[in-house]
Image (cartoon, rainbow, N blue to C red):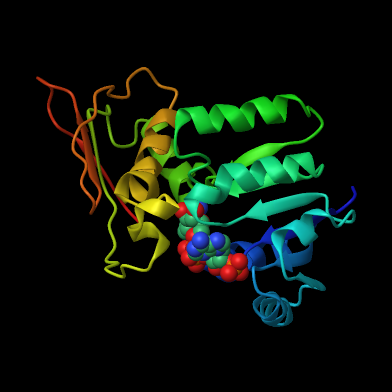
Length: 224
Ligand SMILES: NC(=O)c1ccc[n+]([C@@H]2O[C@H](COP(=O)([O-])OP(=O)(O)OC[C@H]3O[C@@H](n4cnc5c(N)ncnc54)[C@H](OP(=O)(O)O)[C@@H]3O)[C@@H](O)[C@H]2O)c1
């Protein structure tokens, strides 16, 4: 099988520290290029991670005909625009979550993807594939913890930096976009009709609870 030649838009932390090194050990991945708004940053990151090509703009990377697919770890408000530009350049897309800030935005990307059925677009939701979560689902499915009545999850971190993309509305920040969706996607990825349907409780620390009334409570606690 042919290796996929990947390019990365931006030198974001999740890409540089987690995703790129993981992709570099993938059998079918060739990490071929990285782009930054500043060429020096792209070059330094490329040197550090052993990536052969560095570009001083995202446009230049998209114009590289050797690149098959792009990974997009940009701030949230740039996910849809750059995913669409990547499709227009003929590249497959793996874009960080949340794919879009609104359903309308997400539909825009879906429409663009439909025009190009040869190209694949995927949201980078590692939770759906993480062994920890697969194991949690397996335990529930096998009835190892009994009948599922209540799911309680808690996911929080401390980040008080006003300059961080997560804390700025203009870059698509905020608890709902950053953390709450991790919980929601896990819940919606469960097929079982036994999963409680109502949800409430969300604040920027991000705590979400789903509870069925009039049933004994059994807790699946998931702390990441
Ligand atoms: N799937 C997961 O588990 C997971 C985990 C963490 C983060 N994420 C997602 O990954 C994305 C990036 O997160 P991160 O923590 O890696 O972000 P980050 O470290 O702040 O990096 C974002 C990068 O985007 C580029 N950029 C372009 N326009 C920008 C602007 N106006 N302001 C700031 N940066 C800009 C910058 O790269 P250049 O300067 O090189 O162009 C910057 O390094 C977010 O969407 C986040 O939700 C996902």
